[in-house]
Image 1 (cartoon, one colour):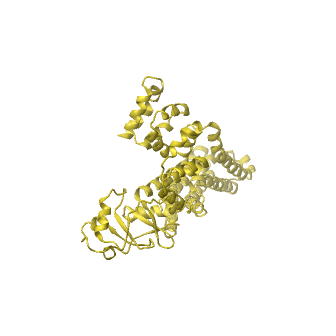
Image 2 (cartoon, helix red, strand yellow):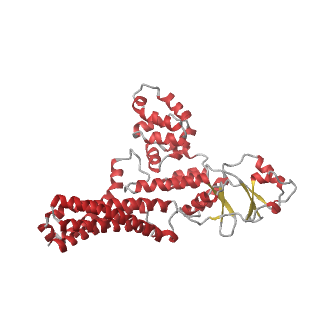
Image 3 (cartoon, one colour):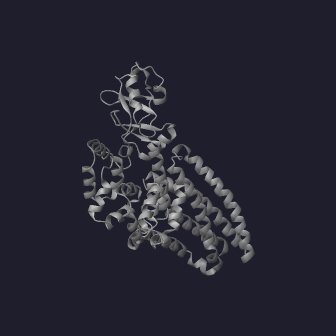
Length: 448
């Protein structure tokens, strides 16, 4: 229902800001009707001037929740448009995880203010999280796990469970006097145990745990596949430091997938719809420039066959067909492989099987469409050798495209380069150059 209301508010934008409704009443209704993440989407659908006029009418509590759900660039636009006195309340009483999500592009003065407003416990958590790199799960762990000493009895653990529990809590973790993780007890089983039994006697010793230095992407996959609501996080000494729950794991995977989609177009992953023209132009100009370089590279290879093109003009007419078929075929494989990498489905164990499968798909489609294009070419130009030439080029280019669609993202991923950001540019260059060389090379051999 909230999403339907969000669409209605966006569609009524002109009416809202033209004075047909009282904007203060609308702001209150939006707070009641929409979740903070949906309000963030709503605001980002408006130009900055309208966005600010509505933003100022929300309560301070709502403003903070909405601010946390915005994209980095959208947050920065709000901070730049308001004075510091209006911005500081956005950072009151944040927990460690919320502040960590904001720190990437946040000015030091706001970070320092937020830290001063934290409780002593949250300051400790924030400091502990900063000991880990951005790609390590320890930086993004939550600190709401329920843990009890092995020396206590079941009755003490039951009393703890009777209190309000964090979301997605299904296990109580058992630790020793040094906070080392010893095991756990599922809450649904704990309630059936005798109150007088020591926890050390009833706990499960085989409790899956994630090292805090593990890659956040791999850790998220592990949580999702574990069948549990959360997994504990431990340091190198085996001490319990926090946990990663299903909500956080799925949120990370969704963000990763969204970022890859937007980066595949050469855009900034946090670009606002109404970001400044200069900033948007700068973000996109880099990849347009890279694409221009690769285009000139392909043109240079075409230039090597200038004499052939002068004698057989039909080759120049048909060159876009060869390039287009290779590019489309490669992009299909590329998209599939990038998604598989993002979900952790592709490993060294199954890579060769995927390559063989894609080559078979490429061979079938290559033979099919090479035959179709060959007949069309013969009907058009009435030249059987020209038809043979384009058949060979189409089949070869689709096979190379299928192979490149697997290997390009795989190699980029191993080099810690996001394949969604640069894979399409490299793939297009490979298929264009190979397609032109195959087509014009065969044309030189068979037609001249």
